[in-house]
Image (cartoon, rainbow, N blue to C red; front, side, top):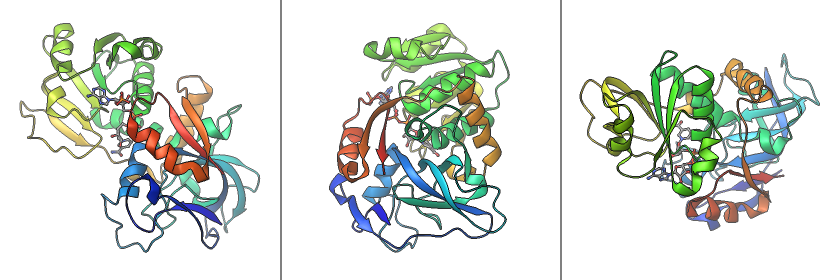
Length: 310
Ligand SMILES: NC(=O)c1ccc[n+]([C@@H]2O[C@H](COP(=O)([O-])OP(=O)(O)OC[C@H]3O[C@@H](n4cnc5c(N)ncnc54)[C@H](OP(=O)(O)O)[C@@H]3O)[C@@H](O)[C@H]2O)c1
């Protein structure tokens, strides 16, 4: 099968169209004929080799999000050939990443594609939807409590604002001037200008600080002052700063822990069908153009996901 793989870690040009043997599903697994794979920031980390390869032999296959049609099932699988599904993938796991013609995964790494949604849009849901759910679970805020979201113009920020509002939280989101309309469309209660002084802007609205911070822009201690004493911060990348202190808990977020969260993935499907989660696609590119997709992602300023098609 064709994959977009990396034999030597490096820049976008390290992504190459390669041929490898087809995988087949084992018990309670299914194989997806991948139609679409979303390009996420973490894929650039895999490509560049920042995280190492966990002993895996090359070629390494990036990609944590796929959608397509089940074309083969293992013994006892609850999926059937022909089912339209979306899935989370783990590039350094047994079945590797989603930039591939075929992706095998355990039954509970998949959920049905939301009714009426094409695979390109569906492919943007699993990984960031599961991350957003994990953030809200870890912060464990109650309806009426206040959540601040940095990086609200991004995809994780998008899903966080929508899910938090759906959960009855009060939400304050950051936005650059040019993103104000886009972020307002997500329905936060307040918008503050994005930037290094975002914590001060949030404190102007909530002088005692907010209950929780979902730091999707990875501002670390630049944003931590927004949080009240004893509040929580969801850290989506390693917390490379001093501990914020003041009784604040930093919750490390790891979406890989949700690889077998089929029930949650099905909730994401339902939330998309209800219109709570609305995917945003910036562009679709043929898989062979993966280097161009990574260049565009790393340049910043995208306001939707690039999705590779197979
Ligand atoms: N730990 C986990 O399991 C996990 C899972 C999913 C995602 N993540 C991480 O979560 C982060 C967000 O992911 P994503 O997919 O939402 O990325 P994204 O779509 O690129 O969004 C990030 C957003 O943050 C904005 N931003 C950058 N610098 C900023 C700043 N100083 N102040 C305010 N906003 C700023 C970006 O704007 P510009 O485009 O203008 O730069 C962009 O809109 C990434 O670091 C990703 O790797 C972690």
